[in-house]
Each structure stands twice: as structure tokens, then as C-alpha cells.
Length: 486
Ligand SMILES: [Zn+2]
Image (cartoon, rainbow, N blue to C red; front, side, top):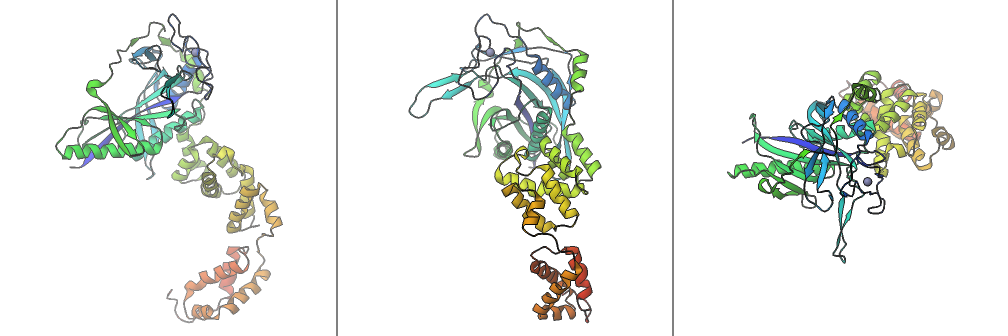
């Protein structure tokens, strides 16, 4: 039996507001435990939450950016459960009336195809605190409530995702969007962008959903993909054995590359949601929504389109460049200062990204600034240096931070583009390789490449390749036998 995998994702993204969602405590990460707390976020009796307006603005931003309906009226709900990191024994969230609904995110696949993934809802809520378990010689557990009350947006997708590749593409695009909007740093490893995956399978062609398992604890794109693939295989194996898939919550174990049952449906929490009596329903004016709309930056999908049209880039190149708006800005600075945008894209996507990956740094920390890379590309365009020499100049720019012109000058790398200088060198190549010359004359015209290579080598890579080709065609003997290419 052939199965289709059906995936829905729930993402929690932590907002970058200065203060918490219902009190004035700082959200800064890494402070001493419990130093960013007050009676409100400690859950003391008798206190009242006061909504942080900026959180609502962030939610409106994301709602507009993902083509959601921003509801003019939404409601706060209490999600009740008992856990040491939740002193109130309830989390303030939104349930029946979320702030945003019915949007979508468009994700680019490797194949160049675009998939539209529907969003069921986006709602606002507060984060819980953190339990910290003592090291080996310490049998205590501790509770740090600095994170309690930090604002989150939960983004719930429709079950529109069909593979781990689509899931990854969706998450990457969603993360780009929150970063473009400046509402979250989207850092998965630090827990500010967390994902739970609902995975089920069904016979190919069926339109009813299978029983799903929810996989929690996914903190990297790779883990999300591996967990989805593992679940699809596990569920198919169960069905093949005539068994049933159980609806349950499962945990991803990175070390073993497996999911484990955490709790079954029977043990599932009943959160007893009800409207929070401490907070009035949230009413948002049309003016507020329009004011937020006016501040939206150009978003990844629009930027990608523009890069294709304005710079004539292949969609795949454009998609990679817009994944980070810093990288997109870097590219535009380079492209604006050189003749050919495509060449700028090749350098940014090739040499620059290779160096950044090798050093494990982001483009904001690049050792070569956009203006310096543009200066290097102009040296190629002006035929001062060859593309090949430029690559070694780039390496030296990374290592020394020097300007490309200075490196070219110091190392005598200026391209040899003078026919009178190149002719004697080519003659020398002929004299040194009489066998190949005779073979060429006998019809083995493929040896042209050999002579180009030898000439480039004899000039230390500095000869202008186009001129070398031209001169070789002039200077090589006419083949006597029919060119058989062999
Ligand atoms: Zn507080």
C-alpha cells in the first residue's frame, strides 16, 4: 500500500518586545534566575495583568504578512494545567477567538515549485518558566521564572504539508518572515522558534485523515525533517502489521533518531479553557491595523519576485538570497555597484556563502564588506584581473581585510591582456609540447583546451582567457585531417 504523509505544524515564536506580555518585567535573556520577575509574572494572588500593546502590534504585523484576517475583536482564555514552572496553574492564551485566522505562507521547494501552506490561526500567549535540574552531584530541581510571561505567537498551519521537505521549506520561510518583520530573532537553537509536528498517514488518493501523532521537542530544521520521516515510516509499519496508529503525544530523541510515546489520548490534558475574567476582550481599531500595515517591510516572497524581474536572477538564486534580509541587502549593494547583477549573485552565493559557512558566521559579520566585493567584481569587469585570479584575491581579502586593488597591486596580479606579451609565451608552449602540437595538426582539435591550460599556467593564471583563445586560434596550425574530435 502506498501512503501519503499529512503534516500540520504548530510553531511558537518568542517576541522581541522589551517587556513581558502582562507586566513591565524585562525579557532580556541570560539574567540571573528569577531576577526578571514581579508579583504578576510570579502568579501572586490578587494581581491583575495589563496587556503590552506592542505584543498586539507584533501579532497584527505577522497576521498581515501572512495574509490572515486580523480579527477586530478577540478574547483571552485561561489554559489550565499544573506544572512547577507555571505558578498561576494556568497560562493566559487565546482559544476560541484568536487574533488572526485563515492566512497562508508560500514556501519554495528544491524543485523550484512553490507550495502554499494554509494557516488556521495565529494567537498570542505567555510563555511558562523553566525547570532547571541539578547536575550529577545535586539532587535538587530549580524553577527560573524569568521566562514566565515572555510573549509568544503560536502559528498553527493547516494539514497542508505532505513531506519533510515541504515542512522544512515552510518553517524556513516563516522564520524569514518573522525576522524580516523584526518581531522575533527566530533562533531555533535558543528556543525562540519552536515547533511541534502533527503527523499522520493515509492511503494515496484518500481524502480522510489518518490518526495522528504529535511530536514535540523539535529544536532544529533537521530534527523536524527526521522526526517526520521517522513517524511516517513507523506508522506505515504499524498499518502493514495490521495494527492501529494511536493518537498520542510523542517525544523526539535526537541521539537515537526515534520518537517515543509521551502520553496517550486517555492521559491527554483537559485544559478546561475558559475566558480570562481579568482581561477585557481585545478590540482593535481599523486605524491601528492600517497604521501597522504602513510599516510592513518588503517581504521575502515579494523580494524574491523582484530579484527575478529586476536582476534577471534564476528563482532558486533569488530564493536563497532573500532567506535573510541581511543577505538580500548585501547582494543589492554589490549588484548596484557592478555591471552584471548575475555575476554579483554568483559571487555572493558562491564564494561569500562558502566563506561564511566555513567560518560559521552570518553575513552581518562578513570579513568582506559589500563595497569591497563590488570593487573586486569591477576589477574583473574592467579586465584588470581574470575571474580565476579574483578568487585568490578574495581569499586574501578574507584573510587580511585589504582592498582588492591593493592586493592586485602588491602581488603583481594584473591581467596580461597584451597580445604582444602573450604571443611569445604561446610560442614557447608550442615548442615545449611538440607531440600535442602534431596531434592537433593531425585533427585532434580537442587539444585546444590543453593549449589554453598550458598558456594560463605559463602566465600564472594572469592571461586574459578570451585573448588566449583568440591568439591560439590564430597561431595553431590548420588541422590537415578532418576534425574527428577524437
Ligand atoms: Zn513581571
